[in-house]
Image (cartoon, rainbow, N blue to C red; front, side, top):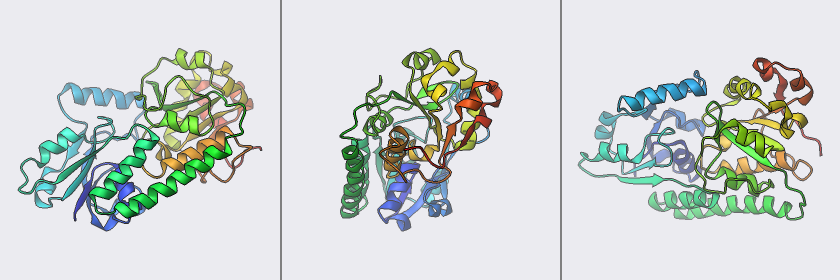
Length: 327
């Protein structure tokens, strides 16, 4: 069997199921595990988010869409000369990866039609179902069942530890800055399961754009900034915009230093590592109950004393790598 995975979560799932050797093509965003980077790239983004701000990315996407184009380039020649048996794609976010409609159109002319599997989980249970679906389609149903069972156990361990928790703080997740975008789909699910109070957006909610005043009025006690397709370095470049907003210093999370930058890989990719994201959130939300959940170089924390007198354009220097949390 030859499998072409055009989204990072699909690639991550395939490797987790021991199917990495069957992958014949990937997208340019498929960078985990390390072996994925050696696979032929079949789909590329026309926008390099690593060097542009969120606002600049927005402008570039609007230009592309206004011209009637797609933000992604699909290698039609490769598909015709290396026809896969299975193609993994998505319909969840037009801006995150090439969409199913584009893939369907690209494979129409192939002599042997590949099976196009559309992955679009919107909640944590939906991610588990996606893993099971990939396993069944690709002949690894037993491995998928074992993987899902292990992931579910880790979720239960977190939830059982939180059974006796009395107070659950107001938490909020941002996956976009300027424009502001909430962490939607499975993110509200993770926030609640990690011990946060039930927020204004239930599990499965889309990634909505908000006005800053909505966040200010919600007054989160813990603010998690896990920007989609962004590492910590890009997050540091984006936070000055937040710090310049009216009421930033008055937010409970800012006053107490409970503002965290988190590497997006544990949140924006709906594969097995989302459970690592749950565990990270659990430790950040209830550090007296969890420890050892946060990988090195994954989280940065705001220093409230430095932030109090810091100009917005210098707020990045008020964040420091998180090494430990008080119990």
